[in-house]
Image (cartoon, rainbow, N blue to C red; front, side, top):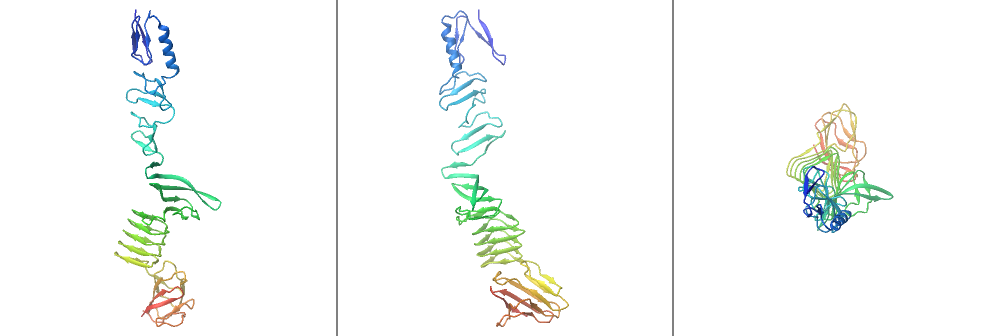
Amino acid sequence: MAYQITNTNGTTITVADNAVDSTYSVQLVGKNRTNYGATINQNFFRLMENFSSGSAPTSPQLGQAWFDSTHSTLKVYGGVVIGWKPLSGIATSEPSGPVAGDMWFDTVNQQLKVYAGSAWVAINSGVVSGGLNGAITETVNAGNVSYYVSSLYASGVRVAVLSKDPVTGTGVTGFGNLVAGINYNTSISTSTVNGNVVGATAVFTSNANVGGNLNLTGEARITGNANVVGNISANIGVFTGAVSITGNANVGNIGAVAGVFTGSLALKAPVTVTASTYTMLATDSSLIINGVATCTVTLLDAATYPGRILNIKTTAAYTVVSAGSNVVPVAGGAAGTAILAATAGKWAMLQSNGTNWVTMMAG
């Protein structure tokens, strides 16, 4: 008489008398089957070795284990949709029917990926034919101090470095010195910020190519050429190269070798001085003196600000003088202290020549 067996989920299987059912990965032996010992022992041995083979067992059952001898990986059967899932190591092909938390290693892009519930997300940087790609946590050394940074690679080249601290003397090509923030590879002449740069201070140790706006509440310091597609706005701008801006330039203090502005150039609004003394600030561009006595102005160090221009006028009938003998008259000659005579409406434009402030125009 045939008998029935029941698996864990309640499904029944009927095994006929004197028969061997080979429907499954193990053979089921019916009653009165001769030589049944060999079949049963064969089943035990297959279970012991977890069906070790380069090919998956036929007719697998949910939860069945299989040792994939090709990849030396133990796998478990998750059903028709999920298939065989590895229990040791990580799959090298995208699993079917994934669930959140599943992982596999993409051998093409050299990326470890995890399933987030709706899509596969790469959780490490990749290596393609061009080299390393993506963000890598690294250390740079300066002296005996190590600093943690995040390096951004593209095609095997470190394009940018994100640092929390300023670092001097890293010895890293293109990143000899780091500022706190984003640093671009100075050995790549075409390094570009394709978008807006917004923040307190931006320091470019080579050329600055900004595809959007440069909006800073602090300083813009660029040792190369400044090419800004949009607007530039900063408290202080120091550019040792050429400046090309297609938008508007609103800078409190700007110094540059050459400037090309196709938009408007707006400097800091004039400062009105009513006291008898005033110390020029790095952000001053124009001064209006309206005091009740002679006003003594302490000008910025001409050597520190070569090329700097200051417009100054008086609306009161009192003289305006410099605190030091560093002002060259409009007609030339020795530097002295006189800036404006005691006549309301007098004005002058002073420019630093690196040694003194030269009166370029006056009226």
